[in-house]
Length: 476
Image (cartoon, rainbow, N blue to C red; front, side):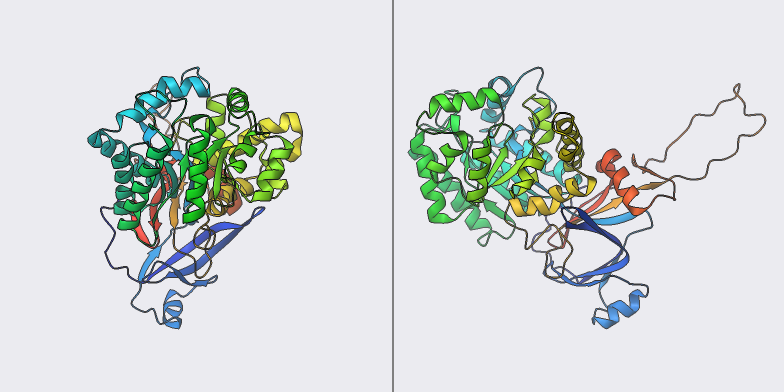
């Protein structure tokens, strides 16, 4: 259950004890058993003890005798919070609803009608509260959210994130072209004015953007006129705010961009010519990029959000993540709800692995992504995409405690069948109500346990979640 209104409640020094697992590099998980991490009153990691046999000695050595202690049991481990680099909070009620559609049809059939209805602030509150609750319960400590074009409901999304303590980037969607008359900006000027209203609101509630930050959000090139894209480029230059949009998700979309922007040589060049392709831009999907576009994105330092579940659900294609990584582009993962069917970043991690194998069937085994790599993309990679790599994504001293406690189920020894309990007297099997879907038999290594969690786990394995040292979710 989400922890109600953690903001403003003083933090206590806390020492976390047990097994800690995080990505050391793209290729390597750092697994530290029987360790201790101290988190101070500001939610920052103050010390890391890789061998903590005597907890009393550890706390005394750091002068933390009165610290709160949180222990992970034998089948539990602490893992960094997931970073969802692309999610449409406004589309959450449609998660799993996409039928046989592809991108452009899906937008008009399912997405625009739902998003437009969130002008109703009561409905928006219900949708956003449940979306945030679900993302937290799945271990997402940071999310780059798309809201709608409505200022009030977009501001409400920021309010809720700050209230419950989730780290978030909140984007009011800018769209003054090729959108339904009932759901579009009336002009580039009105889009910028409304975007500035949301920026002002977030600056008011979180002046230093410690948890919640505005993010400039041109929906995607086809839904924006050139004047609006230019205006957003100027706003980015004057404010330094991060940005998010879509690129090359669908072949029909790519063809549409060519028609709408004939003066541009490519989809990526559309954004570049409007001052939007910078190190603070998050580009979602990037499935159908040309080599020259990839090189331009790398040169400009823009980042990519890989959305494997959505790309498969809408039959958009398989992004060549290895090809992107090999070029030096920073890549993270996104759930892309509701093109993606699940708010679970663990599902995105799993699908990133599986999609890479489908790509490998055509491009060769080098395209495959390992367990270590997909977990990196879901944590440290995502942190780099949103520009927070110095704060979150790992367990080093000075970083903020954005973490989740993962619990796996140890299988009990089975009882022998008594002679009178043959086929004529069957007894139904029962699982304890608190058992998750990952069965541990006791002989698995930690690497094997992590692999079983990646491929079999879900929110039942997420026991507790912290953001900046605050407990924001605890499974009841």
